[in-house]
Structures are given as C-alpha cells and as structure tokens.
Image (tube, rainbow, N blue to C red):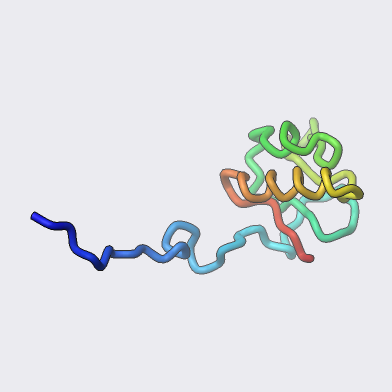
Amino acid sequence: MRASKSATRVPLAAFHGDNLQMADPNDRVPGQVPGRYYVDTQCIDCDLCRETAPANFQRNDEEGFSYVYKQPETPEEETLSKDALDNCPVEAIGNDG
C-alpha cells in the first residue's frame, strides 16, 4: 500500500496552546534587570537556563526560581539566551525584542 501524498499536519500551536510564546511579560518574577529577556512565574527552577546561559541567568535561592540578572551583551550571550528561551520546558522565558 502506498503512503498518501498528503500528510496530516498538526499546527505548531497545538503543542503550545494558542500563544506560541507563553511567557507573560505582565507576570515577571521579581529582581531581574530591565530589558527584552525576562522570566515569568511559570519557572519551575529546572536549571536549564542557568546551565545554558550562566552569564545571563541566576537563581533566586530563597524563592526557588531563575531570573535574568544580565541582559545579553555579546553575540554569544544572545545565542545562549535564545537557546535557553527555546528550550525552556515550561516556556517561562520571554523576549520582548
């Protein structure tokens, strides 16, 4: 039996809800520097962003979440911060720029 030429496509939004970037700029965690990257309260403190972009993300030890303590300043930091955003398991990292 031949496979059909028209494959069924599932929209990307089906995997991410209606909003492809779920981080909420109105729900940012406290203590981060102003700028286009931010972390919202969905953060589960998984450590991925701190491991991926340690120059830009730190942990709030008292509250148990990550936050942006330095906005990217170099192309490498920008790439690593974007990788952290793209790979965040709960989409708690946002980018307003």
